[in-house]
Length: 412
Image 1: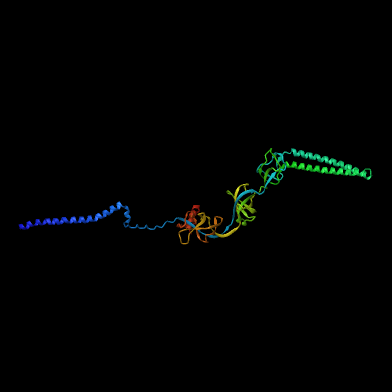
Image 2: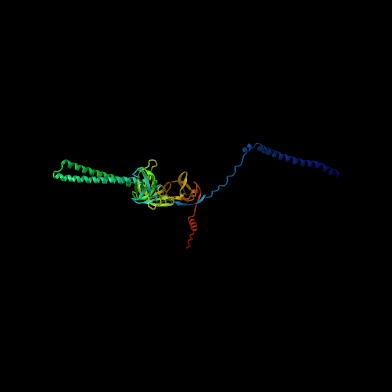
C-alpha cells in the first residue's frame, strides 16, 4: 500500500503541463487572425485612396414614388361656333371740317372780340370787329364822288337835250351836237366808276366785321384785342356744325373688309360710343402701311378733338374653331393651349395660331381640332407634361351656386 500512494503525486505534473499548453496554442491562432485585419485597417486610414480599390456594395435604389398631381384643372372642348370678325384700329378724334376764318382787310386794328373758345355760333354771327374808321371814311368819300358824278351826268344830259331840239330847227351846228353827246357819255362813265369805288369802299367796310360763315363751334381764337393784323391773318377756327369724327388707323390688309355704313364701337377709357363708318381714305401711308377710316361720331359723344381712342368695326361673322380666352397662354412669345389627351392625366403644350376674339372666345386657325379638350381654369400654372386632376363639374357647379348665395334645389 505505501508504494501505491507514493506513485500518485508523481503523475500530477504531467497533467498540469498538458493543461498549460492548450491555452497558449489558442492565443496564437487568434493573434494570427487579428493582426492581418488590423494591418489592412491601418493601411486604409493612412491611404484613403486605396479604399476605392476595395469591393463595395452598391446602394439599393430608392423606391419609385409617383409625383402628386400638379393642379386641379377644368377642361373644355374646342368647338365650332360663329364668331364676329371685327376690325380693330386706334386713332384721334378730329373735326369733320375745321374752318379757318381770317381777315381780308390788312392794316386794321382789332377793336372787338365777340366770341370765346367753345362758343356755339350761328351763320352770320359777329366773330371779330376791326377798327372801322378808315374804311368808313373811304366809303363816305366814294359816296360823295358818286353824287358828284350823278350831278355832272344830269347837266350833260340836259345840254344834250337842248342841242337835239336846236338841231331839229337847224339853229345849232352839227359839231356842237356831237360834243354834247360825248360830254353826256363821259359823265355817265364817270358815274359808273364812282359807283364802283363806292361798292369797293363798302366792301372794305364790311370786311372790318368778320362773321361766321356757317354754324359751328369756336375751336380756337387767334386774334388779340388791339393787335393790328395783316391781310390773311387767322382770326378764329370753327368746327363746322359741331360735327366730330374719329380717324381710325387700320392695317392695309384689313381695309378690304371695311364698308361705309358699318357699325363702329369707339372706346375712350370706360366710355363706349356707338358710331358709323362715313368714308375710307383712298390713300394708305407708305411709311406705316395704315389706312384711315373716317368714323362719324354722334353729337352727344362727349369727345373732344385730339383725344385718343380705339375703334372696333363690325364687319360680320364667320364660323370657326374657338376656345375660351382663359385657355390661351403665352409661351416663348407664342400663343398656346394645354391639351389633355383622352385617357391621360398629363397635359401637352400645343402652340396655336389665333384669330378673331369676341365675347370671351378666341378663334383658333391652326394647332387644334374640334372637340379636343383644353385646360381652361389653371392653365397659367402648368408646364408641358404636368400631371393634373380634372375637377368634378357637378361639384364645381355646387360650389359656384353656394358662393353666389343660391339655395340648392330640393331633391325629388
